[in-house]
View (cartoon, rainbow, N blue to C red):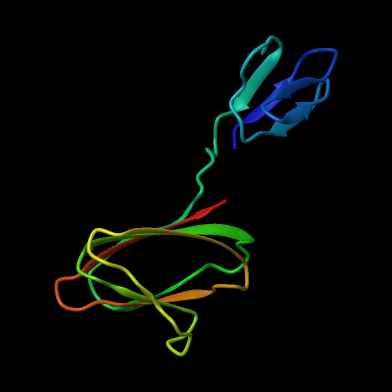
Length: 132
């Protein structure tokens, strides 16, 4: 998140966050509108919502990193009809995707901690997990 300093004598808003006079703050939003007196001190680290991104070509288990409070899981069945189990193979019904399918799942910490992916030969599945 870029770091800004308000060099004005009064509070300023950057996106939905207020920066008091003289305050230094890391802000998710880019400044817009009246930015007079707002100085960028550091552009790094840039915000990156991606937790995990992979093109999967064989069966595997994908673990969700601990401590992620809210996240979205995006699936794209590039080739074939992959099967995904949430947390355990005993968790039925499983998610069965058709060739070319896109599926999005928004969830919370402790509801899903791993994805068990079953692929047959030559099947390809993309998984992207991002903070929400």
